[in-house]
Image 1 (cartoon, rainbow, N blue to C red):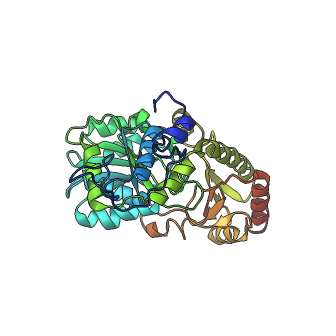
Image 2 (tube, rainbow, N blue to C red; image 1 turned 30 degrees about the vertical axis):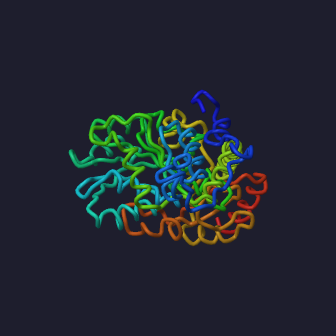
Image 3 (tube, rainbow, N blue to C red; image 1 turned 135 degrees about the vertical axis):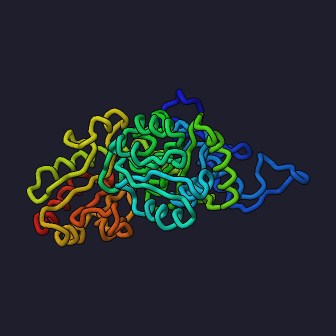
Length: 392
């Protein structure tokens, strides 16, 4: 597919040509572990063993690369499996990473509890503050600046272009977790980032029925000693083996076909939920990049197509009210994860971000996070109103 093709055209067709032998218009599920060779080393289409490559996974990887505008995509068993492979591929003991002060709890847990004991150091910085990120760099040691934008769960916005310049000046790569925005709403590689990661479990899969992750590399990486990042990641993906299986790859491909239309509805609904929450006396703060009062609203408006389907807010009555409000809703499902067609509600301090309690990344205990689905928004608002009338 050409980069000139539209997003939805690429989502439906990139890497997904009709099956050569049958004409099937949907990529088959190649539920197979090994492939017959035409003589020793005679691989058909380059396939020998499904850990190394599988046609269904190849289709997903090519589609993800096309949607992110990258050189090559890699599909993994989870978002964290992709992040771990990326870190192992590019870093060695003694290297240093700058990580967000407002990050997904699992990402921070990985850097603090997994990477650090293996000699990979990190510094926490407010990624919305370019000077804070610059100050966190350890000259000669910092190899990655790792950001989320929007962040999880406080919806902070980082200036991708500005951070890319800072990273490259320091001889580091900029890695952007694009899970919340998705490739439809934001194109980090076009803004100067070197690598994009995603939990494809979320919006890319979109139906809460598959766990997966993706890593996509830029078409050109010019940082000295890291120009071969793509080859390193490919080697480690095969060597470590945390790959996406054929059926998981197929489910994610199916989700990507409707990503654009789903994201439009997620955004439509989120904006109306934000309007509702902003008028509630019991709500002390609403976090959403689309609000003109958001600290980095102008940056979000510049680098995002729209502002996404994630909303967070705080209740003036505190933690007990937030916990009870989460339990009182009927249509909103109390659960972790996000990005599915159904609306989810959660209490980050006790759920997704419980692992960062007592650290610099601890989140407010009166915070509620919403993943706004694609149901009829009037029903979603009515459900929230009833819960907040009682507990908010």
